[in-house]
Image (cartoon, rainbow, N blue to C red; front, side, top):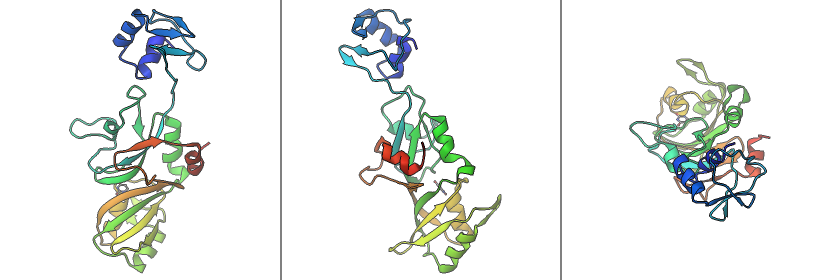
Length: 232
Ligand code: URA
């Protein structure tokens, strides 16, 4: 990889700013000053520093975000703020959200730049579960729980069986689904003559939203998190 690409990918500056830094002899590769932006490096092996500060190579990024309401799950949007506006690092690494949460849904959203990771979690054949906390207009009934267990007829066909359970608060329940159709939870509640008033995703597979993250905060996934997602 060219040194100027490496440094701009790591967020040191734009290509032009990086060229200036090289010219001013601020950059060393393996302790030797380098001034040419064209020089090739191996980011896995070579040690690059800018003004004596080592620049670590980050290739793939995996973040857990506590998505607040009001943000679109997209990489860009002409009108609204997107979830990527909440991530102030790794601007050059082409991050994207893993799946979508509606603008008014909050909670666990993974952000990455790894297409394979996204596929492992989103592919319909993988059946990775997603659990939501739902505040609904009416309390759920035993019959609702049974209907969810069978699957709900939406206009494009029957959903996979879903798990609906009461919580200890009135009008609050937990629903686990095994696919990711458009507005799925809202439409499933609508189909049982109820309405979702607030929705929060609390887990993906066995990975739960970190309760120490305030809305809008994020952290890197840990090895333990990957195990919980059952991703090698
Ligand atoms: N189901 C919905 O209806 N909305 C979401 O944001 C996620 C699941």
